[in-house]
Amino acid sequence: MNIHLGLTPLISLVAGVLILAIPRLLNYIVAIYLIVIGLIGLFGMGGGLR
Image (cartoon, rainbow, N blue to C red; front, side):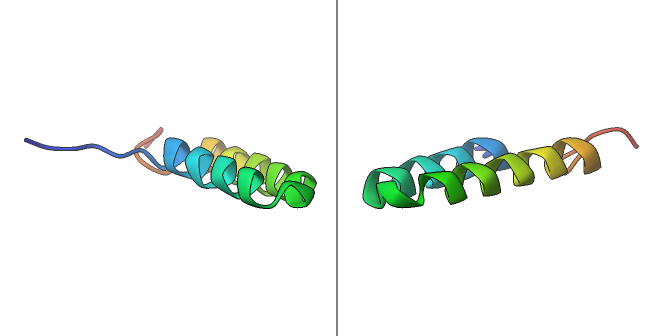
């Protein structure tokens, strides 16, 4: 049995936990999340266009 864990859901989970733990960091967490997701989309980490 193989378990495939994508990078995007993992980043979302970490961001959500950090927002719950430290709400005043919300702006920074959202900004970093958007940048990381954008980079993943542009560079196709995890198997994109080859």
